Image 1 (tube, rainbow, N blue to C red):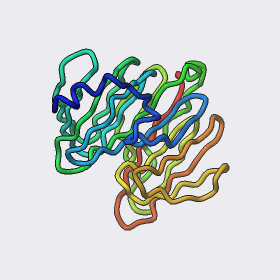
Image 2: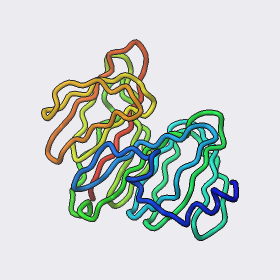
Image 3: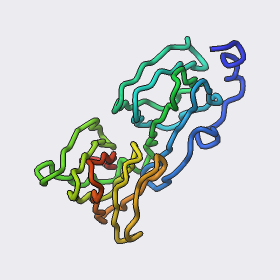
Image 4: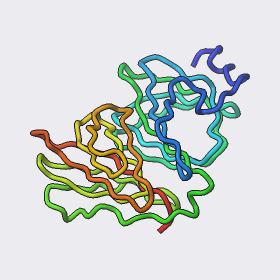
Length: 214
């Protein structure tokens, strides 16, 4: 981390104003950002004012330099999932030769009043579930769908094509949509149910983050 980067926290911006953090979903319960930092690139110093869940898509090596503390290297393995408290102010530098991609889910105060839906059933043919995180207000799972398989997800929840696998998403609110880009996230409102379906010739992976308490 260069001296200029280390001193960058003299000016702190909100997460929503940091150019590498792309706000995709903004609801009463949760906000979701798709974060992409190019090889050798750094973020502005930014403040995480809310508690958040981070999901890392692909192996990564970064430096996190907090405003008050020492810079530390982190090596993340694919599917790393971590819940962090509010208040972190830091600069992130990508040390790898590939983009550092992660999804951030900020927990809004109203989320504590939301009721979590039942998660998709792992017993559905052609559907494999990988539990990643389960907390008081958020639960994350990675779903792998075989070709031709489908599963339902009940809201409040967010679904994401974190690996740019083409998956069909069907909901009462938006009809049919293909998720195939890293920034393709869809929100399923409370009381609504969406359908995830794989129509490609290979398995696809979809991240599902369910909101609310059990």
